[in-house]
Length: 172
Image 1 (tube, one colour):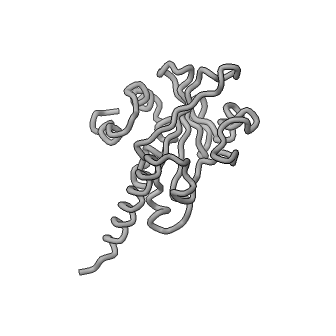
Image 2 (cartoon, rainbow, N blue to C red):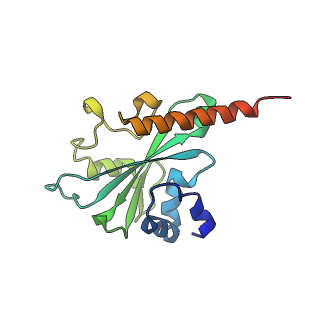
């Protein structure tokens, strides 16, 4: 990935290791909403998690990346917010896997159902508040996790996207 291409990711908390991996594995990068800047705005808020030490994949770090879907916000069609799940295998910052609703492209891109099968442990993990199942699409801000910073940034981006959309329809 050239320096100009990396500039679009610089304001985000993405490590050089992940950027280098994206550069070396274009299928991985293309599986992320992060690469589709025409449609998605990545929120500067990632959630890192791991399974408990007693589980098989406890050394893997799960990175939840949040996005505003500009197309859906402009058209008023929900969901307005979406997620990507990236797994840092063994937390070594050398190998990453994307879990997506797009087609699988092993060894670094797999389906969301594979993510929940591998890391959800039969729906034991990855639940939202009130034990509701984890989802990767959120209709609006009130459906996002109860995190003030995440919701404030989501509100700001949604407002900005709507303002941009409205300015496109103003005629002099």
